[in-house]
Image (cartoon, rainbow, N blue to C red):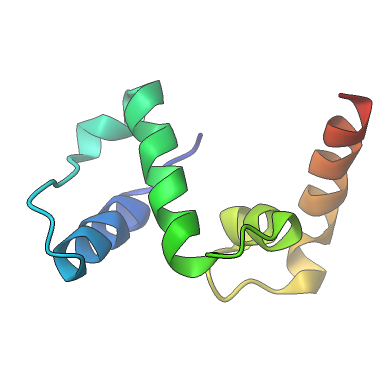
Length: 84
């Protein structure tokens, strides 16, 4: 899922602000289950309404994504989702 070190740190900061004792390690990026947990944590914090477009674009371009710079990725993901 292409979990970056910055995302791991962001997850840990969110957990800290939520008063959780749980923390992720860099090695957790390679664990599918933990990667999905981190994705859901980031989405719950930055995209609480679960907007699909925002989820796709922010996953590719970060929290302060540019629509222009995430357009190709957004179209690619939407094409895959439409086939399902």
